[in-house]
Image (cartoon, rainbow, N blue to C red; front, top):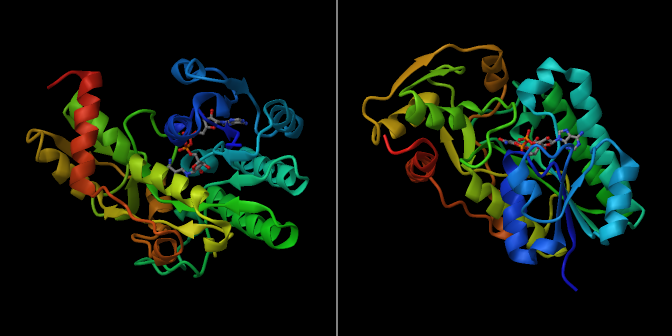
Length: 318
Ligand code: NAD
């Protein structure tokens, strides 16, 4: 029998595309999308959908039983920039939702869990270049603290209770379908929209802020590959380093200018600059590449090409 999947937080930037991909693999009816509301109507109408608050254990449990779910992808979270504004809400949502799902797996209601971590687990004391898999993790954001603690609990539930939980430390994710949800790398999505909409962009990070990034197609591929890998291949039960591209706001501006020569940028760093400065600029993901053959496909210029091509459909061909 095939997998029965529940995605919690399916209407977000990553959930939207993950839902579509998993449905193409497992069949629409075998992938239940859920979120806290029905705001994203195209996703709600595309297949089975339930309203679930990720903080409500019984709501998740009832849905898992109703649909005979074996695998949960927990995508609901408060992200880095929003987490700094609402620290207690970030702690509450990010930690409790994870405990709920891990406890359902511990109790045997479900068999497998996917939960994303982030490069936000790293902090100013972490080596910034080619950050290793195992290194100092002293995050300075609430979001980073929730991800670091979450990783510890994932490993604990695996070691103590045999829970099959898998995780990736996503870098900043760039996509054209859904807008990002309040992270520090959101500029790298907004810039493409503004290049086409207004021809200029005011960037909230400084021009030489180098951060690890990834095109959505690669992030989805990594997620699917990790979840399809045999359990024996998974040596990391906290969260895998995952890497594709590193660039600065200036680099992405130059990449866009190759297509839109009149595009203009200004820089006005805000509180998100401090968050970005606490994170690595590049990531060593050799363990993921060795364990389950992770490989990325998109570099900065190939990503720019797709982003502009797809967004032109939305904004018209300028
Ligand atoms: P997002 O903010 O775009 O989406 C989160 C979704 O969760 C939203 O649809 C929101 O409505 C939903 N949600 C919020 N509160 C909820 C609740 N109480 N119950 C149910 N749903 C709720 O986030 P995303 O970018 O898609 O991120 C998904 C995961 O990936 C998160 O764990 C995030 O930390 C991680 N991540 C994302 C990035 C990135 O660049 N996007 C980078 C690193 C890690």
